[in-house]
Length: 480
Ligand SMILES: *Cc1c(COP(=O)(O)O)cnc(C)c1O
Image 1 (cartoon, rainbow, N blue to C red):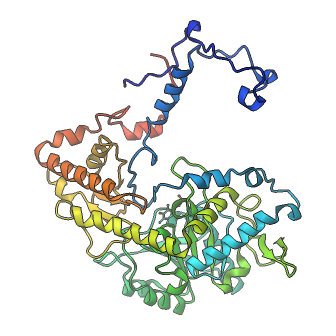
Image 2 (cartoon, rainbow, N blue to C red; image 1 turned 30 degrees about the vertical axis):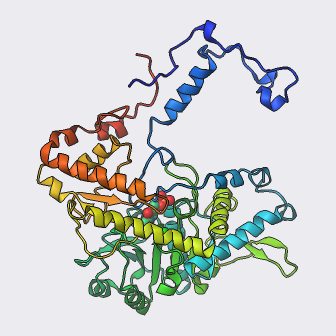
Image 3 (cartoon, helix red, strand yellow; image 1 turned 45 degrees about the vertical axis):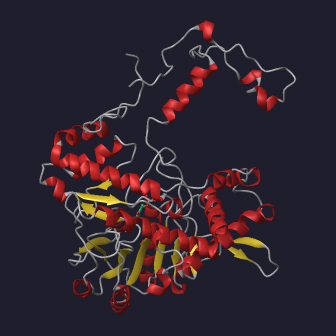
């Protein structure tokens, strides 16, 4: 690696001799003297070296501000930076959760109205903003389902999921005390209605469906699925993490879903991928509203906003205070800036971009399932596999072109899966370059397969033992 880092350079003569004038405002001059420590053993380096050190460090990892990030099911889209600035406004970022409600009317209004917007987008009558992530939304939804069935006298035992379901689905089912049972998909990648009907009985509490499913396909028999599930007295849950495929086009509530979660940190403008806070609101039909987490934000007759804690059937709290408020601000800004037409356009572009890639690569990369894609397209690396290559070799080679790898080996029902989600924020030029690189990689698979097996060759660290890297993580800098 040729990038200059400053950990080991220490030359007092280089230290910064440029000190600000005494009459500058305090915040420009830096930390006050009483907070500065002399004894810290920091390298003595000049300002340009410090700047280059941090800028270079910031680009060692791939990120969406640096390059294309088509990681399937993760919606690694570019989020407007102005929404970061809005969430950081002192009047919002400086709020304390224990402030009296008279002093946080604006924040409560934001929550109240965001809930209404998300209800409109999903077609659900009520929504909680408390859960902190998609999987947390699933867990909350499962608790609501359990509370509902318990109040009918029998919590039931099983929650069904299609075998294409997102990995968090069975995990949330188990955490809510249910037993997950998988139903096989049909040869077209959709739920097998007959198989579902056979699996439904009095023990089934719910069916949890990712729609569009993890193959990027819309569940086109969802009406019939909903009817069968309701007939059995069970609830229909939608994993709506990838709502960027549907906004303004169709609504879970209209499809017959009883519970749906959203990922604000995918569809609605919170950057993610670095493990920062997220938000996974959960919408429900009216009959499930009493079970939602408390408190709920309400608007009283005089127009004032308040918290309603008096909710005896509520499953209780699922997050400290009221959820991750900063994400709610970003979502509100995003929805207000785009408006109904803009949200619809975003979904149309997400779908168009995925299908553009599908169409451009289908001659060279195998498509395991026919039909139009939604927000993502899943290929199989089977064609390249005939040269002894795996999906991961293609993924690693992409890194040499400053493109993040797609999701590989998921969904599990596709052999050597390459799951590509371009998102709505990428330009035609970016998509064309990606397609060109993918076609070049296919050429290499035929003519120079070893190059793919050795890739990546241009990243700070090359092919790693991934098991060791995860099990024996070594993240502390040691001088050579
Ligand atoms: C991302 C995702 C999840 C999980 O969301 P987290 O916020 O990471 O917990 C669940 N389901 C689907 C379909 C997803 O894409």
